[in-house]
Amino acid sequence: KAIELFFEEQDYVCCITLAGASEDITRKMLERDDKEPSAEKLKQWFKDKYPDAEENDKFFHHANKTRNSLKHYNDPNENKVAINQGEAAYWLCRAFMNYEMSHAILTKPLLNYMSWMVKAIKAGDLKAVT
Image (cartoon, rainbow, N blue to C red; front, side):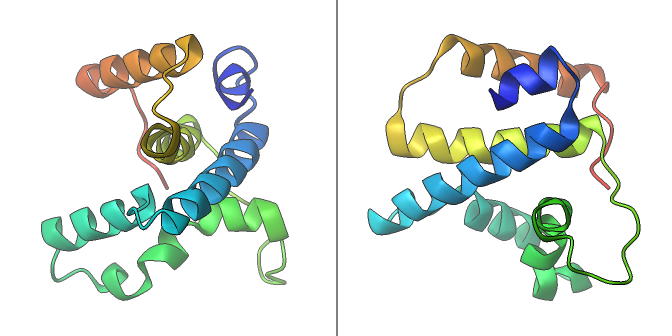
């Protein structure tokens, strides 16, 4: 459904919320099987690529900020949450990576999304995650 929300409705808020929930559930499944979730892999990749970045200490705070803002909306100083296609694609990718590692069932919507993602990255069409 999150993929449908992304492509057919461009409803990035609902897409992020649903993909974020899926990422969280599949992360827990992977951890139970002693497998490394996608977020841990992304954290290590970021640390290797940007070893001196101060974000390394707060990686998950930064990486999960949009999803957590939508999920909890508990920061009294926050009036707006920046949502864009890149942020929705990021959450779909995290959910997809965990799903693939935990289920290894590639459905047609998942394959269509990954094909789109590769093309968008190569073409430079995907806006940066904020």
